[in-house]
Amino acid sequence: MTLTDEQARAHAQALLRARDTGVPIDPFTQAQPDLGMADGYAIQTHLVRSLLERGESIVGYKLGLTSRPMQELLGVDSPDFGPVFASGVFGDGAVLPADGFIAPRVEAEIAVVLECDLSGPGCTAADALTATRGLVAAVEIVDSRIVDWRIRLADTVADLASAGAIALSSLVVPVEGFDPRLLGMVFTRNGELVASGAGAAALGDPMAAVAWLANTLGPMGVVLPAGSVVMTGALHAMVPISPGDVFRAEFDRLGPITIRMARD
Image 1: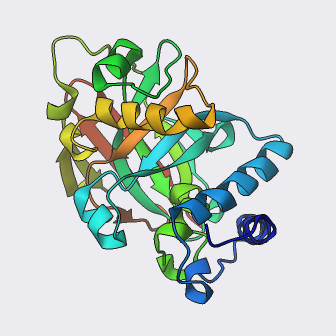
Image 2 (image 1 turned 45 degrees about the horizontal axis):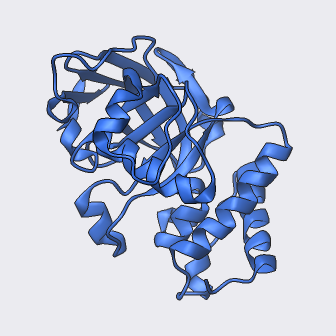
């Protein structure tokens, strides 16, 4: 780590102010280009603590940087993660408040709902599958409290892996008779096709993504509890959002999920 604990706490407070005011901040790596993943998680830890003290509750986790192109862009060889807070979970058909974000983008993803506790180290994709209640069609609103999305690795990790909100279908589909890697998806904005993808885009296998998370959290003493939601990573490049846009992701077997961004 490059940061002291006091510096990490100060950076977390800067992110907290950005969340409160809607005014983005300069990237931490602009002034401190040597910051890395460990520094990002140190900041994230303080930010999460502050949000929990405000009454937030963690209902799951989201993975980022699960695709090879994104890892190459930021010069890393592994995903990152951040918590999913209950206040940021919406249902199918939700209208999301435009003023709740700074620079939102949207991604279609496969969410995993756990049936029982899961922990690492040593967790495999098969273990994750055994612990899974089912898969859910999902979309994620990613957002950045860093101005103009000028992020490097430490910036996005610190900023809760650029988390904004998620929307989940009410249909939880058991993984029986199909391979999650082969689940296809088409994504439309206002009825026009903007992206497509398949489950294998998420770290090669959505179950491998869940296992990676369990193994990463395990040494920290964190167990993924039954009922947790794991957002396994984008199946395509993130798509810009304008007020009034309607997005619909249609998945093989999992069905559709639709959201709309409210007009100003």
